[in-house]
Each structure stands twice: as C-alpha cells, then as structure tokens.
Image (tube, rainbow, N blue to C red):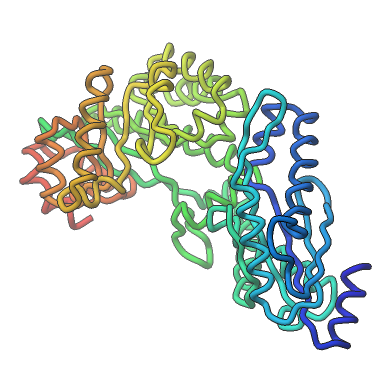
Length: 433
C-alpha cells in the first residue's frame, strides 16, 4: 500500500521510487546451528540496523528521499525509498546498509557475521507498478547473491532472460537423473616422482538435450539451492565407484577416484551409509576412493564433520581438503579433522613462477603439510614451469591441463593402459585431450 502511494506521488511530482529486496547470506546456517530463538533475535537486530541505515543519526540526512523498512517474511526484507531525484541516491543507501552490516552481531555468547544481498529496482525505468518493481528487485537480489553476496545489484532487463534460463534449467535438472543425462569426466592425478597416474578426479557434466554439454558452474549452484545436489552427489559417488571397479576388472592399474562432496551431503547425516552402499554395490575397496571437502564446509559443519570423517577414515577412505589456502586455512582444524591430503588451490599455482608471494605460500603449504604427515596435491598445473617448481618443493601429486584435461571413461582408460614413461615424455600425447 505504501509503495502504491509512493508510486502515485512519484508520477505526480516526477520523482523516482526505489524498491530494495534484501536477503541475508547464510541465515539458514546460523538458524540451524544456534537455534530459532537466536535466529529470531538476529532478525530483530538486522531490522534495527536497516532502520538505522535508512535514518542514520550520525550521518547527514538523505536530501529529499524518504525511506521505510519492512520484513516480507523469513530473512527477507524490503526498503522503500521514495521521492528520489537521482538513482544514485538508492546506491548511496545500499552502500550505507553494507557498511552497517560490516560489524558482527552478538547473539548470546556468540559473535556472528551476516551479510546482505541487495537487489534494487527504480521507477519508472524498471516498472511503474508495485508488483513489477518488487519482482524486478527480487530478480536483482538473486543476481547479487550469485555474485557472492554481500553486495548490491541494480536491475537490468538482461536479468529477466537469465532468470528465465535458470527456471528452465532447474526444471530440466529435476529430470536429468532419470533421463541419464549426467555424465562423469575424469582428470588424471599424477605422481611427481614416478610420473604414474595414481588417481582421477571425477567431474560431473550435464548433456542437456538442447543446450549441449554444461559444465558444473552452469548448474551445480542451482542444485545446491533446491536440494537436488544430494541426489546428484549420490549419483556421482555410485557412478565413480562403479567405473573405478570396472577399470580394475579390465586389468588396468588400480588408482583412487576422488569425488567432491557438497555441504548438503554432509548435513544429511547419512553420508557414511551412502558411501558404504556405493562401495558394496560396486565391489570397490575403500582405499581406492577419495573424498574432497572444502575448508568452509568443514568449518561450518564442525560437529557433523568430525563424526562423519572419522567414520569414513575408519573405513579406509582417503580424505582431502580442497582449495586449501583460500578459506579459513586454520591449523587447528588440520589437527582436529582426520584428513590425509591438502590440495593447493589453482589461484596460487597459476602465478607461482611470476609472483614471489604465491611461490612462497605454495612452498609453505607443502612444508607445513609434510610436517603434519599430510600429502599435497597441486591443481591447475598448466606449464612446465609450474611442474618444475612443484617438484623442486617436494609436492607429491599434481593435476591440470599439462598432465591431461578431464575426459570420458573410455579415453581415460586408454591413458591408464599406457606404459608410464614419466611426466615429460607423456605430456604431448595427453595435451591433445
């Protein structure tokens, strides 16, 4: 009702009206871990900061625009900014909101950080009625969230196309498993001393019937949000185990296949049973299966993570921390979590021959891991310079385009069947993949 009145007044006075749609990043995680009472308290504090942002007493008042704050439901809030003369006034408010959220929230004995994803639609350019403006602000908010959150996005018409494509993909993804459209590609993991292929990372692809082969970045985030990632993850696990056992039955050298886990799989509480079922169905020994988890996943689900990882480790699986160095990188969790391997993120490997800091960080991670009796895998190895440096520092294993791109199971089986003459002489043949 307030928005409708503001729009009518804006049309009369030739003023602009902005609608903000705000969603809290990671609220569900806090609500689940601290309980609904503290979750409600967080929402009250968020509402207070939003009001303070709109009516900050310690800042000069906004010249002209009038603002109101409302909670739409759950952790979704809206802000109405009326009587604007320039769209920049909405951007100024969005930045003020982000600044207000930079400080931690105190919930009982806990200090937590919550960030907002803000979508902004401005009349008359983005719509001249309440429903259209709210819809477009919501679309812009989702775009802010896909950009990593803790930011704002102004609505643009191109976002509607993206939103429609996303809706179509989500619908298609629900049928992709039953239609057997998902496939696995395997990227070799190579021992730096012997040059032998000692493992393969299983990477999911989607053969979409009209869009062609889709990479994980084009659909995994959708699967994470709508819960399909659990079904997709279980399929990857079963398929990778079955394929690895099939290679062994064909007489190929045994290797471990590494599967990436999602946070939702860890939260389900049935991960150990799922892994056990996949191993039993395929006949694969646990030592030939590796699981990769990200740093943030472990830190966010510490209680579930410790119990699940200890059970998996007891089964004989090899456990890895993926993207090490880009998240928490806490030495304490390396002590508490039963992991075997650290994987150095490609962002350090990419420039280690030209950026001294990246080389120093990479060397330090390798030395630290070995001091803790952990193996080290470097991903993103694309040049001979990368490989030479990593070997000189004692990195145990490497993967990347220099050693071989992800390929389907038949092509990977051809690589496994070759004699292993060493890294340098094998590289040209594999580069053609």
